[in-house]
Amino acid sequence: MSSPPSSSCSNVDALKTEEVREVSRSPSPLKKTVIETRRAEQNRAAQRAFRQRKERYVKELEAKVNSMADWPARMEHLENENEGLKRKINELLAHQEESNKKMFKLEPSPPNPCTSTAINNLKSAVPAKVGEKGG
Image (cartoon, rainbow, N blue to C red):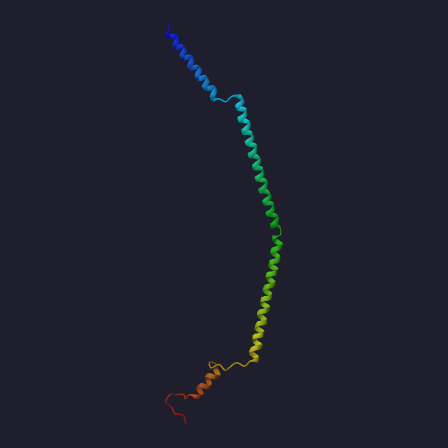
């Protein structure tokens, strides 16, 4: 009869061991509260960081909008300046052309051997046919 009680004792020991394992697997209520508190604090910190990033991003966008607000006026100013510079260039080119015309009128140019008058003068000096003697 000693054998049945020993087998029942080993069963009881096995049950106690399993109960201990189950208890150790699930955290105690105090440990569970600590874990939940820590997790809640991490969530709050993450939310705070997200709000700060979002606020910083919105401020950057607002600064860009403010800097772009004066772009139309600046562009109009640059277009006007560009048109003025184009007019000035055209005035200077016209003045240069007038100066060149006046300069060429004042200084007689040397005769160009390729002009029609020079060619006609050469033709009259040379006999019409080679081998013909003039005179």
